[in-house]
Length: 319
Image 1 (cartoon, rainbow, N blue to C red):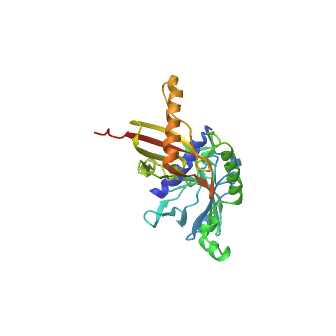
Image 2: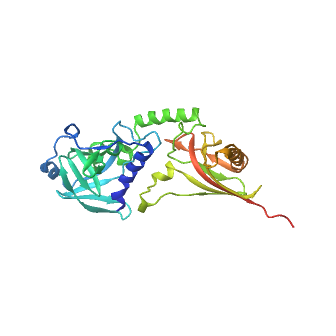
Image 3: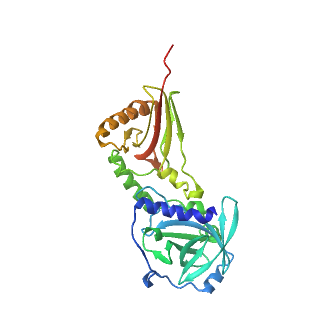
């Protein structure tokens, strides 16, 4: 089920990018919220809730890689042992067994949650990473999901879920600081971050073609977040000075200037030669033959990194 797997892999992606190696620990009393009773669940039966916030424990929906937690779930308790969740692919509410494990820890849609707040107006769930019946005490269990009842959104708050799902003022402040750092140091990989709207490479000549390579693969758990965290492009240059093929990273700054970033070579003695060749490809071909629209987050352009596979094809000799 897509609805069942999407949250896990988004959280997994953020975990991998943060390189967090904390070991899982057993659930402890200090982690437990007020006990959710069967009567609490009975009170919310039949109420449809929409997720309006998904944030880390620091209150932000962004992390330092540029990854964004995006609220998207719609759920409804059907009975004490059945939770409905909206499947956007089939456009229906799908039923999942609601399993109560212990304390406030529940499982549905192949995900583990701690029910932190249950009321007729709102729900707060902490998403948990459970390994061998132990709850991971790291970033994988550091995501809180807030739901509001649809009737509460409409009749009490007099707004829409879409407006409530927008990034917060704290998110904006955080992103602006990240952007300022990235734009001060566009030549440093550890200063730039992924743009929520990715770099656009637009050909200005028939000598060059560009194709965006999507990493989306639901079967492998690669959600659309992979496409903006790791944007990849295939570029073909006709009438090049010679035939060549290279894969490397470039950083596009907030003004659209490209800089060579990371590249791999298994021959250290040829590193400088390879660097000179790739810098020439970037400066002579890519910068001149492409219109570069920089990546941006919250509508603000900033330096970000992309991966390009560039193939050069030499023109056939004249007869």
